[in-house]
Length: 607
Image 1 (cartoon, rainbow, N blue to C red):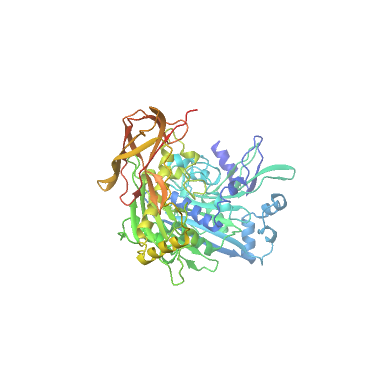
Image 2 (spheres, one colour):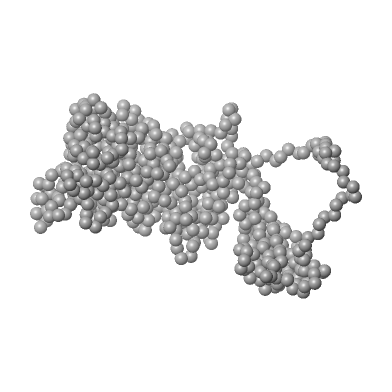
């Protein structure tokens, strides 16, 4: 049987095979290209993020540095004609009317040698290549080119960027004709050297010659027959020969890695370069990533994030967070996030922004007061800012602890562009995963605001003469009232609150803890001996004069109380003339925080 298959493979034509719509349906080709199409980023940024992430995830075991080249080529004349023939683009062109591709695209000018055909090659090295048996659903070849939405990496691998199985779509979505080729030098399931070449097209479902097709198409050895569609990748010498015809750089036996060719590329090299700098600078400055962007004239460009004035503050905050550059606690701050149930969350570094001679910040307005979120792959997930911009301007970089990397990865959508507390994959029995993400994001905000406040200069002293002048003007402008000062209207609530111990903070190691004791009782002139009441005791953190999130309090009382059934966050109890005594102790908190102790008591109207 094996000999029959080999003979069949030898005689099988090398061509594009379009998938016939199966009886039970299936994913349309568009599903492979639409996933990352609405991320809100420039297509070149998405390509830089996802392509490098795919390579970083495929790095060789024990290897930290990955090399990725983006090579632009433009074909004209005979070189274009030869490529069109080798790539079989004619079979795609004959369906152009049915595929209804967006324009512009190259199909209408395939036969015109004077019209350039743009190609983009993305080559990686120090990676495993598309290892394994290509027919095995768990192999890297199968996951990369044949499956959609395979989240195996979420469960099987740690410290990776991707986990949805949609990263492949970034290549085809940047092709004017939604077509790519992949050439890989790797090893098979037995560890033997293996070259593979395969083409994929991800088009819309369509009808052609009275037959329905899903829109998926594959370029390789067409072994279809007996009602079953099978397209095998070209292997070894056949793969190497076809790769040469398609313009791929040759690979030696031990030169493992994967090269992807985007046909009719729609992105410019300078945009790719900027995307690499914007999102991969942590890995670049840590010397764990080498990238080259080579334009059609052969000019080699390297990403240089350290030369970017708008990125430099984030890099400086990154060094502060890593403790490479000690903070001066005036314009630079380092803030380890408080552990959650003994789980380390990570460290943030902050850098005060300086204005230039034009009274502007070098950092783009959309990134002022933002924090670059970074985890294990060392890609910036997002420049996080969910608050109003304050003065002075500040930026930060947060480096997540490895202990929570899998949780944060689960919080990311397919575009990996944020940490979403509502992500479905965070769901667990205890709610611990969502609590971790929530604590991380809130702590980042709180620490940024605290550092911003610490960096703010104190307000200038108020001139005494101005105060006197204000009072004089106020007296002059306010009409005089006979009868002296009006009496203050007494409170109608029959409740009296006094402190036995005023709120005070005490040192607990390198933190503070606030405590207070107060009494609540009915006023002496209250005729009722007992009144239903409710109490709420909070201790919010003050941020720029605004009330922020509260810290936790432990509350003990000499009366029986329970959560109020009407008002959330309040405690119900029965208040008497004898009164109730409340003892309150806060959790330990950052000594840089300013907190306020707020007890609230009110009678409950009985209906």
